[in-house]
Length: 426
Picture 1: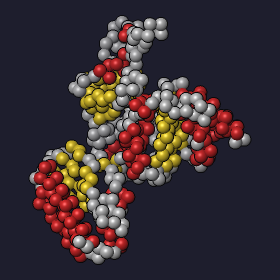
Picture 2: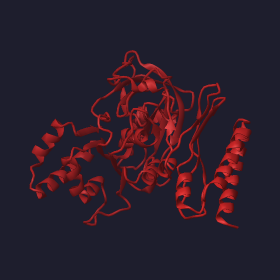
Picture 3: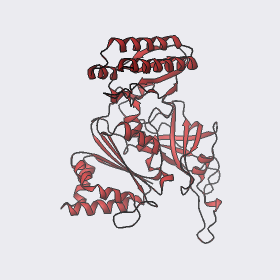
Picture 4: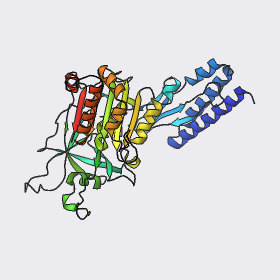
């Protein structure tokens, strides 16, 4: 069998899968079958022995159909390898709920690299229109009553402690920007102020303004369950457990939750330069705002924001089971190797150069020359996590600066003046 025949067979098979998918999803099989026939005709018409022809096919398809509330975004014939018989692989990337009317077909040509990393459509796009971030739309005395959508454990069985993702439905009534926080008021009475509600607990939002459902109606929180163990007995003391974190981690879909905010401006993602460098340093649940940044950069299709810079994430946790959103970050690393770097510091599994535990500051020191050069070039650097992370990081940066013949206090002052230095610790 010659090359043209092999390619035709593979295209026909791809077309059959497309047609079958159409039948399963919404009964519109004939349109997709017609597409398969068109591809077969194109294959016959081209000089398939030519590298040029194969490259032309490589720049082919992104199909977006929206029928009866189901968006199939995206069926792509991608990963065409030049000088190879392997011509097509069907990638069904994203199923989203949409409206209820037929919206028809949209075909966009794209390169092989683009086709292999298709982004998700989001709505409503008027969330991009505001010139200033929303601030304190709901306050402690008049909070918004939202609804728990889901609670998902994020860590494996060997992780010390439990960390959950809490998805909250705010109905589009409490909009926010990436890097902001929600306040949560747990139910019950404040034991220190009888008759009064509990104090507000702040949580960094771990999703973009469009939420994990991409419709602008939800927000995700990354919450570690706070428990207390008696140092003498080693037993857990329920009377000292974290009230709000346990409330959130124990919540069930449909439960109500009182939220305030959004609040915060220091961790907002600067978007004036889409080609800027962003160095993100997180420990544990401090990953929350950076997940929002990265989904906006690499997962969502935003007409007004096309990221072309460098995002470099350092994440410090105890062990592999403690990694948060690792699958998402690993996919970005695969799809955008020129725009994303990802370094993990696993304190219970890795050793630093001195043979001690590997903490995030050790990773920073490992790449210190490169980091300082990026900062000199205008890079933004962000820190989020427990307060205890900062002294070690500051000491490391100071030591590196002195080794470079710089005064760290002066450099830090300049970074703050240039609005390159962003810190949110708790």
